[in-house]
Image 1: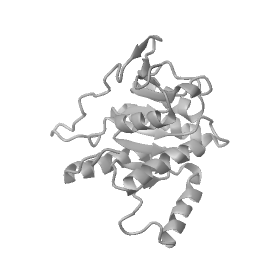
Image 2: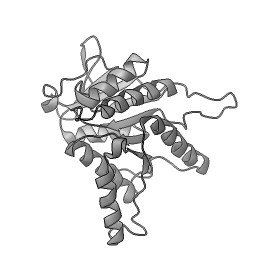
Image 3: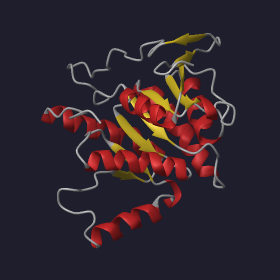
Image 4: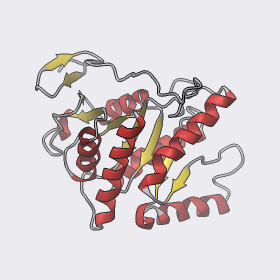
Length: 235
């Protein structure tokens, strides 16, 4: 693979070079009054584990979110794997008629078993390229339960937001209190004045999968009303 090129692969297995094989932009749904019912969200990036975890509620939440994204007409951007919560999420989105873009680095393509049924499958050359592509393709971010990779991806988006590099909504899905220790750590950082005025952490915490899409739509809608741009400068 040449530097700066991205291999994309569709359901039929064909491989192409370039930044985009298929456009994910659809006409935005309206309520009949010309107002967006999905807050102007075209795609949501979801971070989650390549394993299912030991609690069945995690996989159930992933499936529920996939169904909700499809119903809302919002595309899924995710890590491209077919295993664990990633697989549950993507398969559910596709099952219910949704759109899926997977972005996976070449060195993980075998380990995480790429989801070849995805509408668009991008094989990136590095983790850095993967994360940047996921950022560029998405209008909001969601963190489901996962491991250190999921944590790293979530914290990176929080940091970029904290430093004023973007204003895209960040949703933490605290399924079965999974993220409680992390949220407690954020409170400790705030108490110790490492998170402070001018360096606030702006996240939306929900406790169920059913709340994720409505929370993202509401947050995006508020920004549209205020005239805020989703990306205020290049990273």
